[in-house]
Image 1 (cartoon, rainbow, N blue to C red):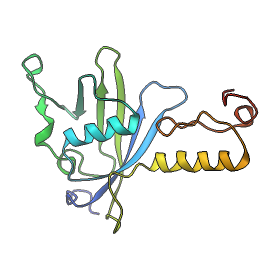
Image 2 (image 1 turned 90 degrees about the vertical axis):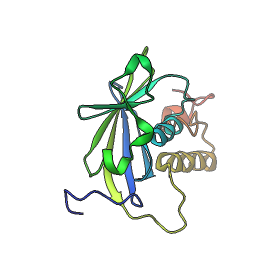
Image 3 (image 1 turned 135 degrees about the horizontal axis):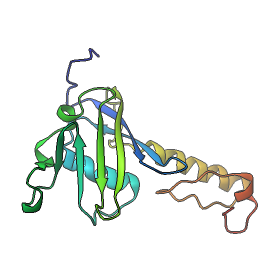
Length: 168
């Protein structure tokens, strides 16, 4: 795709969400329609990360801030009025997503690829969840125990295979 051409809203974005400051890195990958509003993206991020939308949030894209407008945050633009295909319009585009201002959970949202939708595939598509389910099936087939939950997958290692509760 030419670098200056805005993708059509019917395209699919492969995005990577990375929690800042986490060691080891904590990240998720998801496929979303480019036509989502930033408000809809917020709900996808909540589901991807495993939160319940109980705190305030905002997106920072370049010099602009987007969120739920209120009297205390006048400079925040309405996230319902902006589509991803406009705000994050090319591969490499980034947003900073802050959730729960008191705890300061900050994530980088990166557009990794712009794709055509696959016929019959529902979106958003949670690629990390598919991998977690596959890991659970492998663990079950081998008789291993694990603490690998669908919302927070962990690696199955030799130390977790042999412990009674699945932890190292």
